[in-house]
Length: 340
Image 1: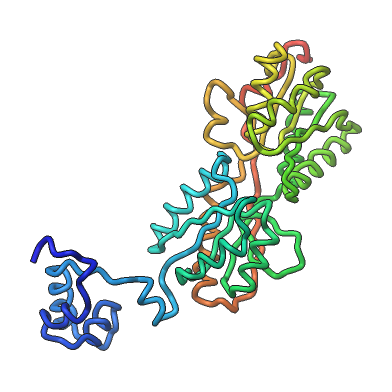
Image 2: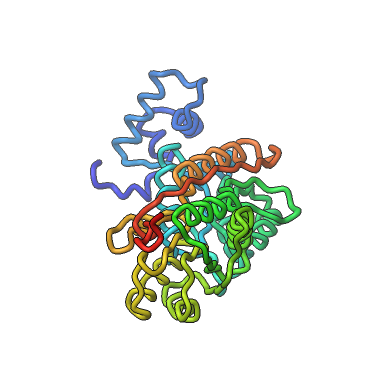
């Protein structure tokens, strides 16, 4: 019966071919231990011959579990979010789970996204949600969907999170730039209302203060290359020794603005450090020093937490922190004039 449309095959047809009842077929396909091995093999052979594939969503309506994990992203234009999504899809697959991806942005409310996701009977939600963290938390709570935020969350609601230590990351950047000989500094902040940019800045300023240093300039931009390149002009008119950027996208824009718009050398006239250590940071055209959040570990922990919440939605929330590390590259090499 090769070539038969699998969408039209039902458990009743499988049961007829296997010489079993539909309920026996359902139990055999779900791994019920009450079904003998001989019966199971007969059912599997019939299902294979007919090209039958179980409808996991329909099964979930009965069993209250589908093996589907909702994934919410807010900025697929972000190098970090795009890489995180790729790793999440791979990690979920390796754990026998299926991702269902939705984008949440300014034109679509978190409520609308979660409502659509709930219609697919997802077992839990993993959200790369900044700057919509609060909306996602509230929407999942209303929908009673277990949630894992891949971010730190400052709100009062109890929610499981897996995130980096952003204050520590900012401090690592400051310590590195100081060690490279910089004595005047600026911070390039992100304009998205999220706590992460402020936390990175706080750690940066704290570490500078420990050496009696300060941040002489601060600019900000949305996390967009074009907008950031325009915003960089104000800083580059009188550049400091070093700039710490809230993420790699801002750093890439700053480097290009310095080299191509202001005629400055990076790192000869200006040292630049970013955050996230995205794939592009290692490319020779940027060779960007950046704070690495250990994204594979963040993803692995987020998937483990989502799976645990899917199995026990009443489990107490856990706040999991992964420590960052600094990856030094060419944009912070010590300029000859600073050699001691």
